[in-house]
Length: 267
Image (cartoon, rainbow, N blue to C red; front, side, top):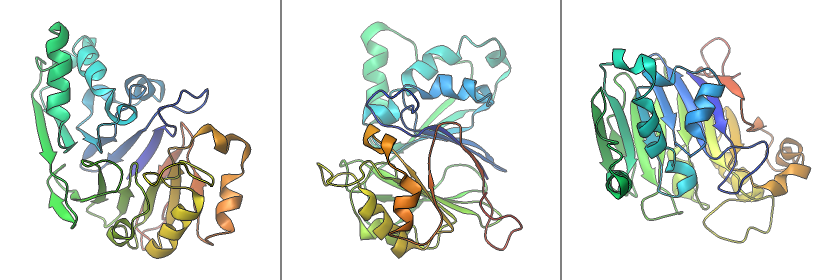
């Protein structure tokens, strides 16, 4: 697996952080984890093969995680190279994705669903217990609800080599999430606030590191960072609370992932 951070920020505009999006390249295909309004152009900026994207995962319906879907579908049909595409674009995630896109589509006859290639939609109900789902062939995919919005879901992905990744997206503190992510190679975990968080529906650093201690991942990538983090050395502060490997996400960061028994591990 190879990961590219497209957006490490939040809904609040930031000069260096786009809203949530992560490109994941696997032997089974490419997967976009969340699709903020910034994501379509960020894929192009990173010179990724966005016209051949295999699948999109949407964790929940806050606009900083899903608002790029409609612009992507509106714009992709005009890309000169798209006429050669025949494989479907699979859109997976929480309940309500199709309803949201239809509302946008019907507001001005955007013809979002009329593409030169098939679109597939797969929506999943909230689940308090881990549930296996189908995403890309060759990838084991599991989901679990998180305490953020009713529809919010975390996802765990395991490739054929046994490399594992969990993407929490937005979440409040959850020991169920920690159990779901146990011993994962890379935990992509939100850490919205440094301390004194104003809501239980997000994490601050002490929450995130408490989850890390329970999970025991090979590496934690902290993301969804508000501007209060700009003047804080996140990695140094994290080390005070958990001795493991914590990385501050930033736009453009690239990581190569492999299981611990595979040469290289997570880099």
